[in-house]
Amino acid sequence: MPTTVQTCETLSERLSAVVLKRPTKLGWFTCIAISFTGVLMLNVAISWLLLRGVGVWGINEPVAWGFAIVNFVWWIGIGHAGTFISAILLLLHQHWRTSINRFTEAMTLFAVACAALFPLLHLGRPWVFYFLVPYPDTMRLWPQWRSPLVWDVFAVSTYFTVSLVYWYIGLVPDLATMRDRATRRWIKVIYGIGALGWRGSAKHWARYEMAYLLLAGLATPLVLSVHSVVSLDFSVAILPGWHSTIFPPYFVAGAIFSGFAMVLTLLIPFRKIYKLEDVISERHLDLASKVMLATGLMVALGYASESWMAWYSDEPNEEFLALNRMLGPYWPVWWTTMTCNVLVPQLLWWRRIRISPLPLFIISLLVNVGMWAERYMIVVVSLHRDFLPSSWGKFHGTVWDWATFAGTIGLFFTLMFLFVRLLPMIPIAELRKQTVEEGKEV
Figure: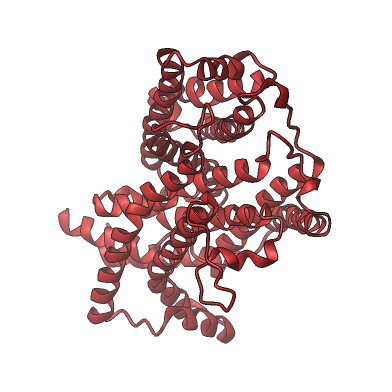
């Protein structure tokens, strides 16, 4: 039987070899080429937007918010799972997070980067985005603090900054491992710069663990605050379907729900491609599925609460909106949302489904579709028929709406493919530590 030291050495060699020794195959080049095509499409869409203005999108009166806000809320929600898995589960001493936290942290950064594009693009004049930041200037211009746009800027920038620092701090010991195991000098230099002189001394480990724990404590409230702030963009309005106190917890549960769905959507194929079934085991899939089931039930409760309050309030506009979502011109959106977010996740009650990669992949993919449809329902369906029938209208995304959305998906996958090729997607140092602790317990 191998000793704990031998097991740790084998683990380090295997996980670092995914980046340092595994040849870059044709499949990776094909995937990065397809995703980078999406990035080029995004560049074209943004260039046309800057040239012609936001009128190239399908927004109009009364639907003044369209794909930009839908996609912004959807991407921010996806970014929640990484912080939840890494920070909250660390504070709760859940060791199953160790095999997947690096991957989910990177997913958070890439999703937030995609989300941050939309508040800037729908400004109309994105080149003066710095007006949203309070800074001393001769014109004495200050942000409008009552504007939800300003809230979003501060919430998203804080979330991204803390998540980036937290991700990088956790990566430092692994960069040192990559530095020590690299054979080419220029690769050693690059990883060595990132490792910040890490030598694995007791002082280094003590400061690392203190910083990591403090940042986890800072990141944990952000899971609740960021999407709560995003939900206030809607709930502060008096529009039926938006003016609701249930939005903050409902949005947070939906964010974790969609975030875990994206984690499983990405994790299952990468787990198979890189042959990491023993590191990311069936137990990880099972527990992630349970979290997705629990948050899915919270989201279903939010849907039921909305419908109940629309009836119980005896407010004609609220009642009309509830029926309009189900039976109006956008009825496919409502039924897609209910099917993908309420009915399909009920399959996760069965353990056989929770540990089966293919059914779990399909369920998580459908949940991602359903959560995007939910955002579309909240934004577009709530706006297209307001208090005055004379101002009713329809919204249809133009080719530039879809091109921008597809482009952000391409940007997300491009960053993800580069990440798994250049950096260890499994935290080597944390797995080694867990292996040692489990060896001592045995």
